[in-house]
Length: 262
Image 1 (cartoon, rainbow, N blue to C red):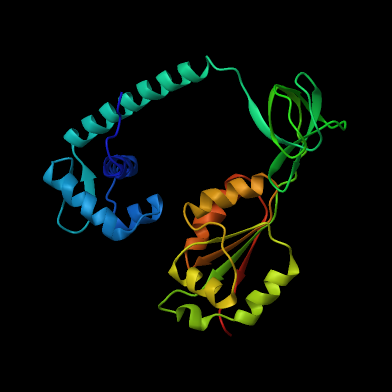
Image 2: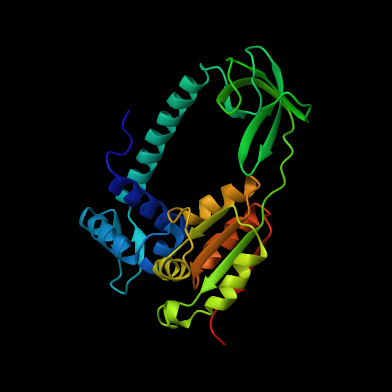
């Protein structure tokens, strides 16, 4: 079953769902911020939705979903549910296997301890609070397949520092206190560095900092912190709020540093 044929269809589905969820007038800017896409992308997709009669507008820039649009969303949701049910049924036929890195030579059938270090799961012959069984004989440093996981893997969430940069209207990278950013970078050893926005890309280039990720930055930041990694994120203006909301939901500690020149 093919639910969505193109990425554009997925975007249109999300836009329709967002308009329907609000149950009141909603503007393109609101949709773009919620879905983390550009206003231009929202505008192009809404034009298609208007042409197809799936949404309507009063002419003042606000949008409402039509009954035809509601029927389409319902149909897409049911198709998506059926598809996920099929995938889950297939996945349930597989034996649960988890990958890790062997810290010693391991043999098939060994019971090993599990520990997390800098976001990587390791299998060791030492005693830990979580255990698993080895499925394949491996050498130290190789990837090992594990099954029958039990116990609790001790994991302390990482720290997140969000560097809030000035927008283009505020001066962009030229309005940044680069020395302040250098001091922040020296204060802690960050495992991962993320960027969000063009100004962020310009700033890390000026400072000679290598970024590890720049797409789906809010999601990656949260997942990295949950894995125990310390994350430094460069954002621009209100983009910081997109990340802090996700961190708040996961109860992950963070600090926001405003680095505009005084």
